[in-house]
Length: 394
Ligand code: FEO
Image 1 (cartoon, rainbow, N blue to C red):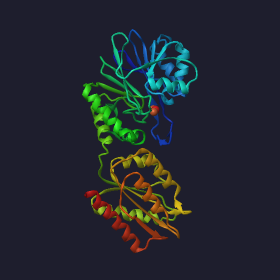
Image 2 (image 1 turned 90 degrees about the vertical axis):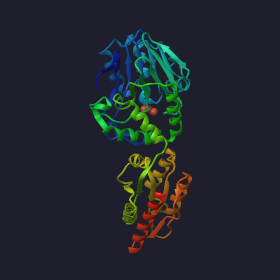
Image 3 (image 1 turned 180 degrees about the vertical axis):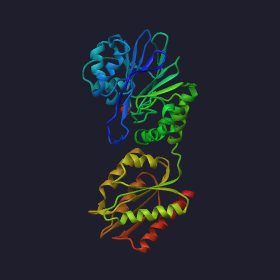
Image 4 (image 1 turned 30 degrees about the vertical axis):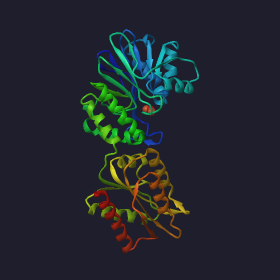
């Protein structure tokens, strides 16, 4: 990724990672970017670095604009290593005595990641710092995505450097939202569903406080993916909607199967849901990655989970999915369970127990069919789909 001027004396200087396909358990089929921003002012300031392996690319990009040694300040909005991994190399190049501004938790977490002593300067929430013609404001955003996360707002430019928030794992030739259009939204949605969903309450509070303070944004620059400049408010509105757990008349039927019996039940449940006018989506876990399934769960009202019983237990992919979903804490969902079994048949009870632990409104007792569903079994699955559809309507 070549450096790009995004505003007067502000450059995007980060790196593109075309080939990453798994980002700590999240499938990144479109790669990602590690964005960093260089502000030329009386104090030349670098906002964030990149993953360790891309530090040379960052330095190369900066060198096309200025000698990196001229950088006066570094800001670390977030400690996670996709943004700070390049910090030791950058500091070695620009001078290890240069200040690194971060949140209080950032100071602690950076110190725990990188054992050499750097000149960390902890900033307070709301603290302002002049770098010449510009004033930067630091806003603590704990848990978006880590306890150390913060935003940096360039007051005069009305540009928000938002770290992980509003990002997307998307690598492409485009650098701005208006160059991609609405095709970027599914990537932002997947990012929210897999990275930020469990922090929904904090996001709503943050949006409220930003609105109360009357902050205006001409541009939102996340550390992953494209920059929002056409209508930055639109991604904030989507974050508010997703954080409120607003659901559509939609169901996800997610399952795995051993000998196609649970699959036949899934197909019939989908038909029953469709009969009730529900947009139903069937997702086989040996085909779909859990991060894609969660993206669909985000705005679905019902999650219907199917598993064969294997060794008195859940099928492993279903167990894994339930663990993943539980951690992300989707709310206000209807849940139901189904599955084929041979002789013991614990899977449906185990799924129901997990759905109840997630506080789903569970349609009890779910549906079990021994071995291969016959006509009655298929009809029972259809009726379960209809029942869930009616519950969505209520
Ligand atoms: Fe992009 Fe939480 O790191």
